Length: 233
Image (cartoon, rainbow, N blue to C red):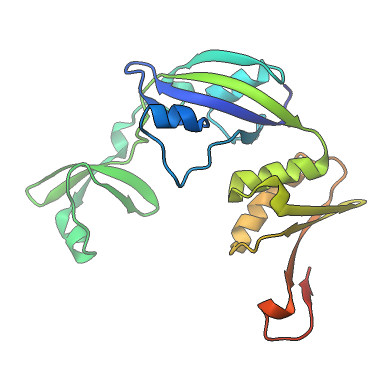
């Protein structure tokens, strides 16, 4: 695969030392390993090669493969979720947790200043929190398969929409007119403008001949108090 290619991949990710599965796109594997989550959609995941969608080691492996190819790869920590950084272990006054009604129980996860961390200990009024990624410092093993490639502009935009929103391809209507793409979601999503911006920026960076992406919101009579159809571009 080449830089900028849009591909869908299946994978099973394990921690090398323990063989523990931490992520998979296969529902049957998830059920067998008792990690199945009803909220997770188990299906091939779209990525853009060299687009920063996956860890470095996984991205590099995809570049050496072709559509339909399968590979078992080992990824060292520095090309996975990084080595553990002692500076990301912080001591925080317990009072800060109490003021926000947060139970500082060891083992619990908390988010502070937009960083997610795990509480390691709570002793003497000080809480030790580890903000390293849970898989930092671990070598990983992946069973990887490239299922298919998205080649046309509309296919690529649908892939990016699925990556950011989780919508099916059939949920997205796309009309291409010269250098402009109009994107409309058939099912109404409460989507922040920042998400739309991320979709547009990630798609346009790699699309051919597209200078603008517009998101279309439509409201029928049953959806709005207004009798007229509203279309916003």
